[in-house]
Image (cartoon, rainbow, N blue to C red; front, side):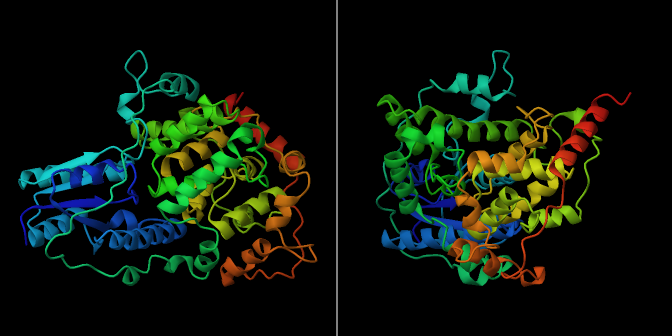
Length: 472
């Protein structure tokens, strides 16, 4: 093989537009060999994220073939795999996009140091975030801990324009060995649910760009006023594609910024939501135990319940609270959940059911195809009251009044709750086709009675918060 070879280590950056690592790999004219590695971090993913990652990998592999390239698939320790491919190909350099979760940082530091020791150029690149987490600091040189000042610090920053689409990757004379994606069985844990969720997923760069275009055309004007209504379709849905790097945050930012400059009423709020994602990653980078430990240490020892029978009813969308159950079923059917609904189900679990937020976080981690470790952790702690920028302890969302306010016509409820409907939509039927057979749930059963009294549950939660704050 030619010694003029560069490896492009792909992880969660399956696109050609605005891909700094890919651009760098192609810059010196070397043959580029894209590689994806199924390592311990991939193996540890929950059922839905792992299935969706496999779909992203397979879709991008086909896109590479259309450009005269191919994706090399290997399973094993990342450093060992890269060294093996380097030995096979004579590659002189490896490029990849940075990741910011604790496990990825540790892995990437080890890989970079070892490859450099081997005499290989090892270079990481930005691309997952608008702002590198270490590049945003307070006046005292510290990380931000509150969103509003973080937004003010970054909203007027110059953000470089997206890089042009890579149209061609020079192929090597010979290709190294590759495993088969189908042999990895990345959808196995989804069982029959994969077939259902696949109908609702938007996989690949083209569909991500189409989503953005449709949102900007149809919804950005009314985004701020309509985004909290789950049946409105007013959100972009781009969290799924951002998770797998099928679109870059920079591409979204500049598109939203143009619409803001043109006077679209909801554009600034849309950009704030994109920066909320940035803030979550900023926090996880600087405080790596965010996903496991209470941000506010005063919450340690709070009497949340561990996993319990009520939490199982919550997981199954069988609490007897229509807003909660519709949301949980939406997640099981589509792999995603509307943001307002996420707040409702999190509040219900942690407050009305007095269950530890980590129980909910782990279920989302297993079921969401847009699972994001930073946003997921911060969102759960925000609602529970234990996190940064947290909702005040006395904010207990009432799912009944929230349903009346945000789904007055019952459109969202009926979309996902089959019981009681003479002619339910397919989305409601899909829940019973997606769930594990072991749950024993059938479509002709009666909708359950509420498992918790909303007024009493709220009072219990408030009493527990007050007692914890002031034991006297």
